[in-house]
Amino acid sequence: MADRILMIEDDAHLASMVQEYLAANGFEVAVAPRAERGLSMLDGGSFRAVLLDVMLPDLDGFETCRRIRARGDTPVLMLTARGDDTDRIVGLEIGADDYLPKPFNPRELLARLRAILRRRRGDAERRPVLRFGRLEIDREARRVRLDGSERPLTSHQFDLLVALAESAGRVLSRDALMEKVRGDTLEAFDRSIDVHVSRIRAAIEDDPRRPRRILTVRGAGYVFARAQDED
Image (cartoon, rainbow, N blue to C red):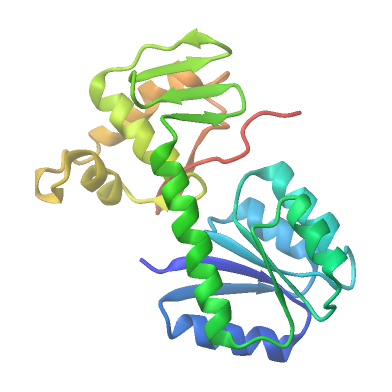
């Protein structure tokens, strides 16, 4: 499955060029010409990274980056026609992962994007505890806590929760989940995965009937939400 990238860019020609080039290199790129549209798409979809223009017609890229950071830790590569070092420093200070001035070589964009994704994967692998608001998943101790209180799960349910959390923001089909947990789709146990998800929700959701952590995507599977608790 191709990594999905969100590009927030009002230059239609540049966006089309980047979209075509990255598609040829294994990425799926969705384009938003305005910041508000991009933020809405980020809330409604699963993206591995954001390519963010600094000069946008509604919000500037810095404010947009702040709002992206308030939503979660999706990697952000900022793009700008301004070569001012101050802009670059501000962008990095507010949470951007990298900064690329325009005009740029598409090969450099690809290299920087891949480097960001490699770093994020490496960071996730090194972190023993995954934190999502009030929820903590301790992979080494195999413990789950909500507001500091331990929530009991079976071994299989814990593995399923970790598989979802490690892919936070990405929709995972039942087959993909079973492959991650069991390692062999031939040993799939059909719809019983829904039963396990239901029991995990009962343990970690404030209201299992209205889940905010593990969301069902009709006809596709499940997605573990990056932003789960209201401020």
